[in-house]
Length: 106
Length: 325
Image 1: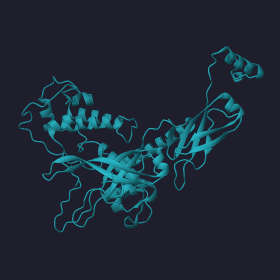
Image 2 (image 1 turned 30 degrees about the vertical axis):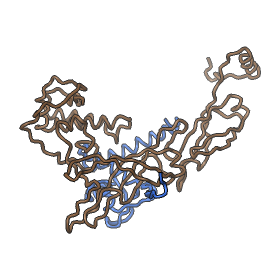
Image 3 (image 1 turned 60 degrees about the horizontal axis):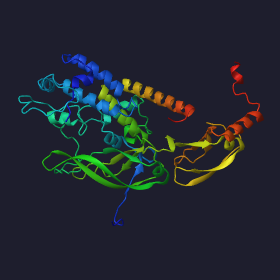
């Protein structure tokens, strides 16, 4: 039981501390860069910066991009349909949060 | 191994047309997709539906499945007949491998599926390097889910976690390997957020460098605290006289310490007391809510009944005056 030689791997909280380029996001969400550009032009993702080369995606874009990739694949929906589905899902989660604020959490 | 009735899973007749199978699959997929359905068993159900569809939508696989006959029942003990699939040729699903839940996912198929159709071709590089000259690719990013304690989110923690990673042996077979990682978890992580461990994903090719490992966080269920984003709730039972007269109570904090809390006189059930900034720490920390819950002791002995009667005399209390009965 020698505890002394353990090297603890450092980790960072993606949603709070990480900004990603389109290359990194494409890699992390296993999604082609072209598809991410389509999502940005439809407003699914909103990076800072003016051109794809200097886009900076906030950490919570990763979860959204992964959800978008799953919905696109599993339902074969196009980008406008995807944008609508995500907006409606956002509304549902806002309503759920409001409900739990009124009733206390489940 | 249990037999899986793919027709029953999709709720279609054995003679269903391709169009009927697709419609049934789509309806069930929309209902059980884990991004849409937040029930606990939705993901398992979605995978069953996806597995059933991956067989029944494929003419060759469906024909092979059908020739086992219609006498098998869902859940019946099963082993594949010898040479059951002789003469059938299966193509890999070209859609497999792009970030979805459904379809042929490595490690997601049932044992039943794998005994019949084998495992899907493994698309991730695993941790095995395969450096070809002049080729440089960054390794795959890997994703996994882990459970931690709420206290870890408050204090940060050093935890040894074990992950089951599909990887390839030297002959190219897919095997599941256990991998232990000693991780320094920073404080402030919340449910559904991800930790990134740089360079702990799949190995790259050439000078490409390793991919990253992403760990999605959930908390172990906790009997005391409920968590909502960065806010934490504690239910605080109070005796009627404590709530009426006010008192001071010691409460355990999610961080593991004890806090003395003053209960003001005439505290009401359900009226949340906010301890600002005592939720999960962060640049903008969450709040810790203590929710008073007034508990009535049962009147059993004569003395206890008399005490309630004294209360009745002392108050001119009409709890139902608004009902105008």
